[in-house]
Structure formats: C-alpha cells, structure tokens
Image 1 (cartoon, rainbow, N blue to C red):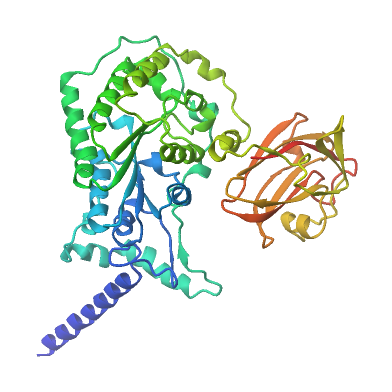
Image 2 (cartoon, rainbow, N blue to C red):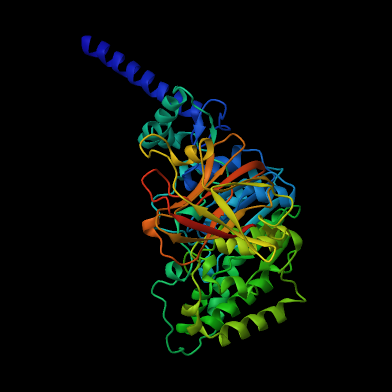
Length: 527
C-alpha cells in the first residue's frame, strides 16, 4: 500500500511538473507554434529559421512574403512594404532545396488567405536537383512543428533547448529592470551584411582561370529532371493560387561563379538550363520572372559580393525596386534575345581581368555608388550645398577657387581617456573639425568622405548621433594605424527617418597627443 501511495504521489508530481513546463512553453511560445508572439511582455529573438519560420507563416499578420535561400536573407521587409504597399514577412531558409521552400510557401498559403504577393529567389546552383531533394547535412528537420499532430508536440513542449535556452531566459529577462519587450525585426532577421567582408580580397580567395574545358550541353535526361523539379516546386503552387502574384528571380551570382562554370565546361549548359526553366515558367500568368545577369556592371564588380554567390544588401534593395518596376523581367518576346546576349557575354568575357579590379577600402562604398539608381537622389556635397549649415572647431575650410573641398583639423583634444567615452566627449565637450545636422529620410543612406593624416597624431573619429543624442554609428582610426595617403571612408547611416548630428573629428582623441597634429577631411558627400 505504501509503495502504491508513493507511486501515486510520484506520478502526480511528475504530471504537475510536466504540465507546468508545458504551460510555460505554450504561454511564451518562442517558436510561435500556438499563437502570435506576446511582444508587449517578452523579447523574441528571431534566430532559428527552421524552427521559427513555420510559426511565423501561420500566426503572424501579413499579406506578402519574401522567401528563398541565403540569397534572400539580406532583403528588408521595410523596403518591401514601402515599394509594394504591403505588409510583409521574411522567411528565408539558408541552403534550402526547391522542395523545402515550396513546402513552406504552400503551408503559408494554406494558413493565410490574405497572402497575395510572394517574392522568391531561384538559385542557379540547384537547377539540376531532384524534385524531392532535401538537405541531409542540416540536422533533423523539426517536422513536429510543421504538422497538426498534437501528440508529437512533446518534442517542443519538453525540449531541453527550448525550455532552458529560450523560455527560461526570456522569462528571466522580462523581470530585469529596464527590460524592453519586442521582437527582432524582419530587416535584421538572418541579415548577414555586417558579418562579412566584400571585394576581390574576400570573394576571390582561391580564384584562378583554367584552360577552357570542352563545353557540355543540356541532355534530355537532365531536362526531364529539371522539368519535374520546376513543375513540382515552382509551378504547382502558383497554379493552385491564381489570385496570388509570384515574383521569381534568378539569384544574380558574381562573375566568379561564371568563371568556375567556364573552367569546367559547364557555362553553356547552365544557360541552356536557365532558358529551359524560363520557358516552363513563362506561360503561367501569375508568375513574374526576372533575371539580372544583364547588369554586368554589378555582377562583375566583386565589391558587391562576399563570395562567388552571395551579394550585399544593396543588391537586394535594387532587386525589389526592379521587380516592382518590371525591369529585367523575362517575357516570351524578350527571352530569346536575353539568353543570346547572356551567352555571348559570359562565353567571351576575359576572366583574367577579374583579379585586376579595385577592392574598395570601405565595403559600403559600393552601396553608396548605387544609391542614386536605387533612390533617384543625387549625392549631396555637404560643404557646398546651401541646405546644410555646419560648425567648425579648431579647423579651417579648404577653399579651391571658391569651391570648398575639405576641412583642415589641428591639435589634440583635452579628453582624459580614463574618464569619458570618446563619442560622449565629442558630443558634449569638444571636437576638432566639423559638425552638421541632417534631416535624414529613407533615401539618404551613406556618408562618404576622404581623409588624410597630415602630421603627427592627426586621427580620424567620426560619430553619428540620433535625435536622442545616442551614438548610432562611428568610425575611428588611431594615428598609428594610418599612413599619409588619402583614404576613402563610408558610414552606413541608420535606416528610416530621423534628425542626425554628425561630428567629424580630426584632432588626436585625448590629451596625450601633439598639439601640432593635423588631419584633413575632403569630398564629404551624402548618398
């Protein structure tokens, strides 16, 4: 009897414990499996695509969706919303197959009758994949989150990583003083822009041009594989949802990708496959198909790429603009000429010239140079545009026949490096150089300028402050890391609209420098 009594207590205790744990997981629901995020109570980090995307598509409010592989991770839904006049989500699946993405698209359409626009990248590296192919090297897929089977939800409700890695931390964080609830924005979700370097040094690692191999062509067997894959994973869903617009685009790989194809005799086959896929897609009226390979100025400039495949976020921004405007859209009338030109360009390109291109000192400079095309706004010369007023401190304007070309900065700050943060000191105490305000709109994205150390401890310290006085970005280089050459620098300004204060300091950053220190700023432009 005693043993039975203890068994009952044990079962009851375990049941209560498991029930409490289940309640906590369901209540906070970090993967949105049961409900929308409680963004007024907790902070939800978005950082697990295959566990969170399904909950996002089922329980968030939206009428447009961006999806695809890592080629779509740098899209910003704020730009999508503004350009297309919609309310969008971004649910990328890094390294996904056509099937995985298609399954997610279909689940989204089943769950959300308001979904009317889908932007999806078509990866050229997967043209020849089997229609049922799923990556086996990504670990186990959380299928229990994708179905409606309540029984296998125990894999979520009693998951150690979910309980201790998310629910426990989210609850404790919510009790901290000064806690701010919310959720990772879709602009930030999966965005890897700041995590990589760009240009020939980064993207072209291991680059080589080999003697051209004999070209192979698309076989009938390969066409059958492609046809099954495209019909199943790119066409079947649009045919079921004729009132939904599907914006498909071939992901614009860099010239390094085409060089690799050329080295291996696969270039013509790749173009033949792309043309064949295009012929399969074009008859479907709600599929809008785009290819940007004709923008050879972009794909041949490795300053736009982190590697052979992955392009920087300003390319994603342009893609949204181009698709909305219908630029570079493939049609029955244009595709023959398009693929003829594509083949001619890539088969005749001098791939040896790739290694001779300039690698910009600052990665964002490539984005600044394309910003006029993106926004329609010309670069603004800060020193010579009457819309700007600026203040000088221990500095002089450099004048060249009535044109203000730069700012000459002299001396050293009185700051004690042990007492005060540099950005705070520049804002509240003193700077040596230039200070100006801008009423930033969503079109102004970059501050570009040149800088040169002239003498002694002249240093670069530029800070950008928002309307609340917080330093939101900065660029600082110590004098000992500088040579005496002129260098070009770019600061990516924060997204959105705000009144920004920019301080460009060229004096040494504390009271230990030489009073004869000298630094010059020039060509100060807003893009």
